[in-house]
Structures are given as C-alpha cells and as structure tokens.
Length: 229
Length: 229
DNA sequence: CCAAAAGTGTTGCTACTACACCCATGC
DNA sequence: GCATGGGTGTAGTAGCAACACTTTTGG
Image (cartoon, rainbow over all chains, first blue to last red; front, side, top):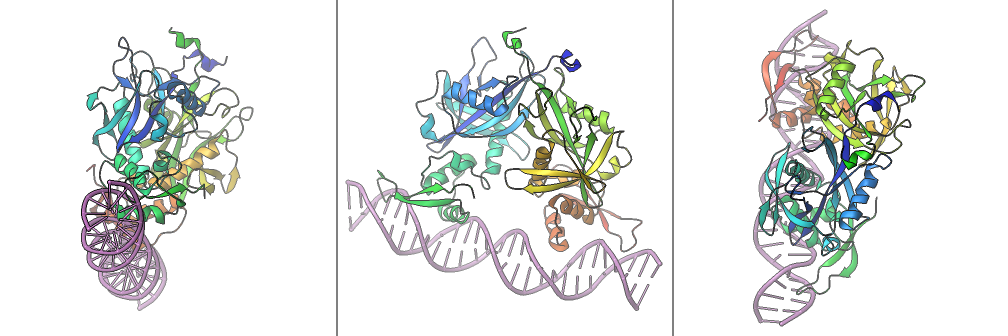
C-alpha cells in the first residue's frame, strides 16, 4: 500500500433517480428505509466497489432493485457533504435513469414505490422536491429532497435540446404521448400545434407508417426516433 | 467498523480545471507530472479526506496549488472509470474554477503552467481537447484530454444563460472585455452590435459611471455585475 | 350525424442577424 | 484632422405563439 492508504477513504455510492411518466404524472422510484435506520423514503443506490466502474454499478443497482436493464441513464451530479448520511461519510454520484412506463408497471420490487415527483420551489440554481404516494406527501431521507429538486431542474433544462423525452417512451409512440411527457416534466399544459411543429422540424423522429390501434377515436400516427445522426 | 468497511473503498479526488482568458486565449492551469510517474501534463487535484467536504477540498487545492481563494467554482462531472489511473483506482470529481486573468499572472506556483486550451473535436455529447504551451502541443495525462473536452463543451453550453463570463473578469470591466471572453470560449468572432444589445438587454450588468483609463483611443465605459436579483 | 381527438393553415409578434453609420479621444 | 476603437440606428428575416379550421374515426 502506498502512503495515501494510511488515510481512510470515504465510501462512494451511486444513487438513482429512476424516472417515468404515468398518466401525465412524473414519477420517481423510491425505497422505504427500515424504521430503525435513517427515516423516510430514499432513491435506490449501491456502493461502488473498488474494481467496478460507476456505470457498471448503476447497471447492478438497476437490475437488483428493479430488475430492468438496457435503459438510458446519465450522470446528474455528485453530492459530497460531510453529514449527508449521519451514520458515516458517503459521497453519492447521482444518476438519472429513464424508464418507459410499461417497463415499470407491476415490476417494482418489494419495498419499492412509484411516487409522484413534485416541486415545492425551484429557481435557476437549485430546488426542493416533494414526493407523494397515493396523494399524500412522504418525507425524503438524507438530502434526497434537494437532489430530486436538482433532478427536476435538469429535466426541465435539457428537455428541449436533448432526447430525454424519448427515453421515457416506448419505441413507437404518438405525438400526443411526447407532449404528455413534456407537460409532465414542465408541469404546465402546452399548445398542440406549435409543439407538433417544433418536434417535427427538429427532424429527430420519423413516421413508422403505422397507426395507433384500439383508440376510441381517430387513430394517431405512430413515430419512432431516428437512429443517431 | 461496519460490515461495509470489509471492502476497500476507492480513493476520491477533486480535479480542477482552473480557467482564465489572457489576450483572447482560453487558458487552463496544468501541472507537469514527475517523469517517473504517469507522463504528461494534468489538472491539479487532491484527495478527498473522510472528514472534509468536496467544496472544502476544492478550496484547499486552490490555495495549495495556486495560492488563490474566493473565486467562483462549480462542479462539472465525476469520472469513475476503473483504469483512468493505472496505479490505483481513483474517482475524480471535476470542478471548473474561474479566475480573472490578473489574479493568475505571475502567481502560478512552481511546476504549474498556463496552457492554451484548444479543441480537436467536439460534438453534442463529448469532446477531446489539446493543450498548447508556447505554441507546441503537449500530451495530457490520464483521461484529462476527454475531461477538458467536456469542460469546453460545458463552457460553451452555459455561456449564454449563466454568469460564467463575468467570473473570468475583474469587478469592473468593459463590454469589449466581455466579448473577448465569449470569443475565446466559443472560438469564433462575434459581431459587436448584437452582442452589446443582448448583454445589456439581459439586465445583469450596470454602468459604474466611470470610464476606462490608459486607453490609446476613446475610453470605454466600465460596467459591473449587478448583485443577485 | 355527433363527439372527440388528429392534424393543418394563417397571422402577428418577437428576437436575432447583418451592416451602415456616428461619436469621442490621442497623436 | 485622422486613425482607432466605442457606441447607436435600422432593415430584413427566421422562428415561434396563438387561434381558427379541417379531417378522421367510433358509436
């Protein structure tokens, strides 16, 4: 061991904001913490072992905690306050994970819930989020209310010029579904015509030719994301 | 010790992209690595001790390596590949630090240089940077070429809707100086009239009333950043 | 035929680009 | 007065918000 190893290293964890939109509601997957521990609901996470990369750790947590793989995720930020966890020093690298609704429904592991993600306040530099389970607010453990505030901030900021909305959708989708994702993330309604045009003008999506089935009224055209330019 | 401590934790470091603009050139402070070590130039950094926060570690590195304090810094991202450092596992939390040129000139500690920061390629998702010392390219250690690519990407992305340009300027500055910062970061010339207007319309700055002194020609008005809205 | 949602056309405004021009100062 | 950079006015244009409208399906 080198001289550096004389010091104890902080623990490093990845925490995941596993996001989805169901019925126009932005949701995040949370786990309830054991009662004798730090109280409240928290994002799922796992420690980073010395021989494993951050991304591999994300994939491990995704498969262990929710049994899914192959979904898109991206790094948000790293939280390293000394007292974020009262038990010991943990530095958390937080990731956003985008999950189409169909993949999560019914699949949530024991002890996990999909909570409505709301915002109590947000400005340009930060925010604070609240989580609702069956309509009632629950308390968030650690600094996860702050982190989830930053999550919403990032979602709103990148929504227009990135593909995150499509990461929340199945492979084939209607324009209306894209709009619902945007409305859920922004928390306000949008007008259909300008939204359609902006989306189509970006040239990111193309019609599949097929139409939605099972609809009660006029069937909408289905689109897919073009593969990387 | 808890059971978790049975595992060795990875080391955590902060690495700093200390940035400035001198004579229209975007520069980054680098340290030359000892020859018997990992070769090349690297960003200064330091390990995160278990009882010290990330931000405090940034401040310690700033004062140790360049003897400055009180400048603006912000987190970029965290790099956690297993083999980024061939000697041992290090997870690096990278920060941008913005330094007005006057603070750095002449003050660089022994073994540090201000290198021109250029870009060999950049797209929406990533980039690769090169560093020039006295006009000749030097090699960057570890994954620092990738990281510095991400640095430029972030600078360009946030330039318009943030105050990072002002963090590179002294308290009082001319509009021309702001434009030079923007041109250095974007790597292309800008037209003066629209630039002036956009800047003034944002309402972030106000005239001090004073004029630049020592200029050869018509003196420019001095501005200052309004304090937080 | 009617309700409901899909999809289109048109107008007006805003904001940015680009260029031409005038102003103030040192030599 | 002239060279040089500071500062302003103005026209053309692209893009977006808002609303009215037409189209297509199931009952």
